[in-house]
Image (cartoon, rainbow, N blue to C red; front, side, top):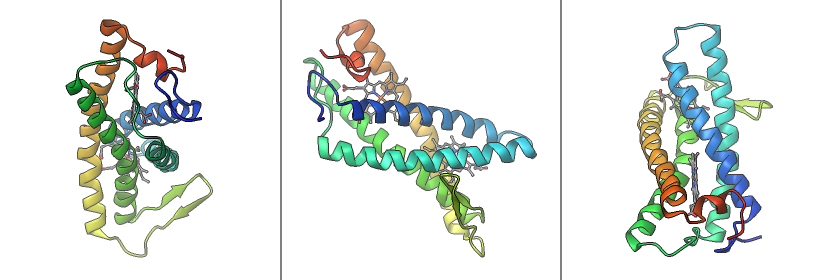
Length: 180
Ligand code: HEM
Ligand code: HEM
């Protein structure tokens, strides 16, 4: 069940792709929806964005717990220490962002007087009165952490492609389920 150098656990792989792909979509939808003119389509997208965001938070929280129990991945091959340090730092930033983005999104929504949808079953809030410091603080973090996350994901994907295309090692294949 645990990750080894030769093979990742199916849970690691499922968590990685479920959270990773949802977050890339949420970043794209988030930037697109905020630029739309007011209207039904915009409100609909805000609703889906919030629902998918809170759902991914639950999966991401389990994933952080799983990573904490399992430790960070052991490199697939020997490569320079600085590359390993950089990759590990990027992985920590990504893990933190997968939790910080939904939390700041929930804070901005709630603080600005809107409900937080949970699994389409019920809502938390809206609060009786707006909480400006929570809304504005959440908004600031959500916006800037979102842009920082786009930069970090780009670095992460470039790293994965470098391993696959230039070093021709098993780093990407291992995350796709292959045994090295
Ligand atoms: C991993 C999860 C999430 C990602 C990657 C994400 C990403 C983004 C991005 C890139 C934006 C546009 C930039 C901005 O205005 O801040 C945005 C906007 C927004 N997000 Fe999220 N979001 C996530 C989760 C959530 C959650 C859980 C909520 C609420 C429950 C939420 C509520 C909002 C709202 C209300 C806006 C519009 C802000 C405005 O109109 O200024 N987001 N999101
Ligand atoms: C198309 C996009 C992506 C590709 C090709 C990709 C590829 C990979 C690969 C090959 C690894 C294994 C690295 C190693 O063995 O050292 C990895 C690990 C990791 N990736 Fe990605 N990734 C992508 C998107 C993302 C996104 C969007 C996130 C989070 C927002 C993310 C978070 C992580 C984390 C935290 C790890 C460390 C291992 C783990 O906890 O699962 N990845 N990724």
